[in-house]
Image (cartoon, rainbow, N blue to C red; front, side, top):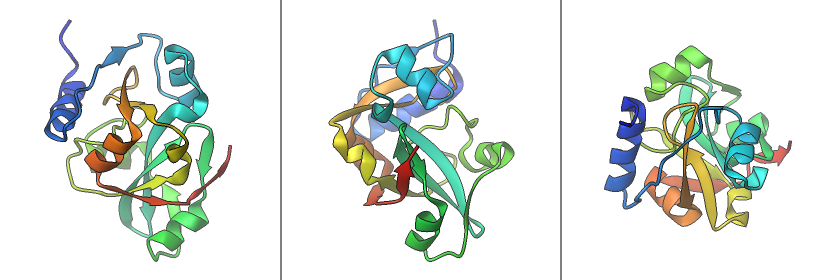
Amino acid sequence: EPLPPETARVVEAAVAAGIAPRIHHFPEGTRTSKDAARAVGCDLGAIAKSLVFEVDDRPVLVLCSGDRRVDEVKLAAVFGGSRARPASRDRVLEITGYSAGGTPAVGHDRVLEVVADVSLARYRWVWTAGGTADTVYPVSVERLIAASNARWQEISTRE
């Protein structure tokens, strides 16, 4: 069956970045890290969450392991801002072109600054969102970081 248009955009961006994504579709949904880990049968930490935050009024993308929580104080400090907050669902869609719960690491409507939490470095391979709340694909951490143009930072705490 044809890919949803959002997923087709992710595939196109991933391929352009040197990734050959094998999209996995889970009708039961992969909206949360726990759902995704259960669906693919991996460690919770091997789910790479793509989260949109606003540091003051500046949208940024954070890649973080599924078993970690973004520390908003650390995130604000990394960007030299005074406060960081998760973007609202409406803002996520407006900023990235994707719905929260399916936000990918690549293929956004605009270029975003991206940071990757060091928690992801525990893994060689992770699963990341395919543009919808029921699609994911495996990718090497090295390629994910390169494709998303992320820089490593320590910005999380344990869930």
